[in-house]
Every structure is written in structure tokens, then in C-alpha cells.
Length: 92
Image (tube, rainbow, N blue to C red; front, side):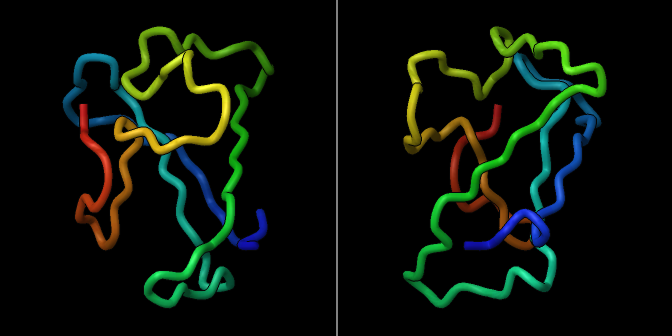
């Protein structure tokens, strides 16, 4: 597993807001995460985020939110970039 010490996360404001999206969360890996060979798997990468005051986020108007997803699933409204290029998903 990658381990939380090898992950970094930050919220980034979009320069131009889009319907259902004005910020996104960027998850990056430190060099300690290593690299994957083609076809290899990192295993699950689980991320939890919270507000400073621990109040709930309003997900209902978020582009990537789907209340029917109650377990891990592919979801094309979550994007993945490699070296700045979109390689998975559909942007809002």
C-alpha cells in the first residue's frame, strides 16, 4: 500500500468555475510512494477530508457526487491526470 505519509492533498480553486465545480481536490504522491509497473495495482487509496470545524460539506451540488455510489466503483466524474494530461474521467 502507498500509505498516508506518501500522499498530499489540497483544494484548488478553478480559474473559471463550471456547473457543479468551483474547486477540486488534488491528491499527489511523494517520491516515497515509488512507482507502478504497467498493469500493476496500487491497491485501494482511501482519502478522508474534513473542514477545520468538522461541519459537513454540501455534496448535493458537486459534479462528482453520486449518492447511489455506496461502495468503491468506477466513476467517470472523478478525473485522473498524469503529468497534467487527462487520462481518466470526464471534466465538468
